[in-house]
Amino acid sequence: MLEKLPNQYNSFEVKEALQRMGPLLPMNIFLRQEVDRIQRVLKEVKSTLTDLKLAIDGTIVMSQNLRTSLDSMYDARIPERWQKISWESATLGFWYTELLERDAQFRTWCQNGKPNVFWMTGFFNPQGFLTAMRQDVTRAHKGWALDSVVLQNMITRHSKEDIKEGPAEGVYVHGLFLEGAGLDRRSGKLIESKPKVLYEQMPVIFIFAINTTAGKDPKLYECPIYRKPQRTDLKYVGSIDFETDHNPRHWTLRGVALLCDIK
Image 1 (cartoon, rainbow, N blue to C red):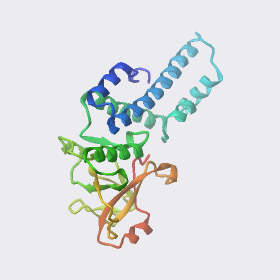
Image 2: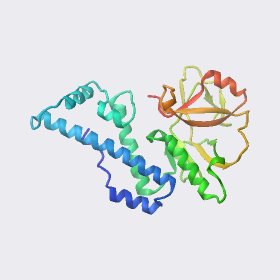
Image 3: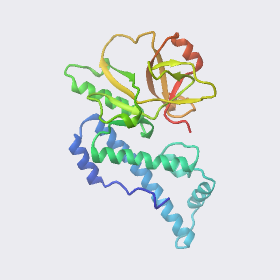
Image 4: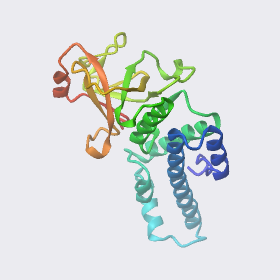
């Protein structure tokens, strides 16, 4: 695990990268907060693993904290101290892979600028990501007020590999799963789920913001997004609109939702 662990972020390099991209843009402020949080996780993981190695060799005393961490790792559970400052996951293996993937997304963003497609599951604060995007769009248009700017979306037919450049405004996101319904790839409408298919992976979704005071179209199904399969208020991220040939209530009764992570 220590061999695979990414290095700590160099705060000067992060600062430089943010200066280059515009330090006061909402998206970059969001990035800085995310990098700070993953930095904390990396630090904690590194110190626990290094101390464990020393304790096993007998160089330092095996404290109660280290012992509990070692027991958790032996059972493929996430040590409590890591879980406290990070995210939930089914097993230590899944958690660790996710740590590497999240870290990779932030590093690429710092080095190469804004990614073309965002992996929404990889954020500590996905709501903050959508809000930052709304603020970005509001700032770009003179005379728009944040209160009247609402999120809209379009289901594309692309997978993330097909996307070669980001949109002029708004964001492309990938990595969401649809639960309780299927998706007609051609029209982007909701259909009944296929037999024995619990989750359907979504294509890339284009989320953008428009300035309007009109209400939502009642024919659209407003589909909630949750971080995990346990749907609680704490895991709620936002919502996305789907076109449908049925009455939207049909999907509400089926409990159709989008999940960032199905593990």
